[in-house]
Length: 142
Image (cartoon, rainbow, N blue to C red; front, side):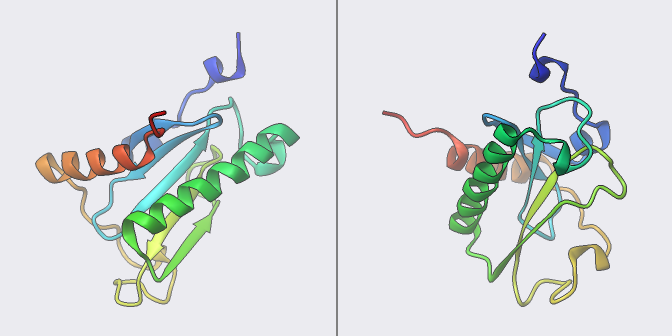
């Protein structure tokens, strides 16, 4: 059995987001929050809590995937600033947030956690944004 086959995403993370794609190490997910364009990277390794548990090879993959996802989010959403963070205070499973921020967003300049969560996208709106993100994250055809 491989580490990847033993991976299970925490149900709270799964319920709070939609899968965009799987990269070499991480699931790339879109957090379902109408207030912010918000990505989450979840390394597909079992029982990870801290970045210090990543192997050197996985750390290299993780940082590359953080950079790639950040650049795609910048291209899609044109934010004033990106917030990139691992917290894990409510969900221990290692996951990283990449959040597009704007000077006129409801939480600016404070952390997004300083305001109540936005409503969830539903129906056609949710489908449209997921399609947009999945196309942006799809590997380029040769």
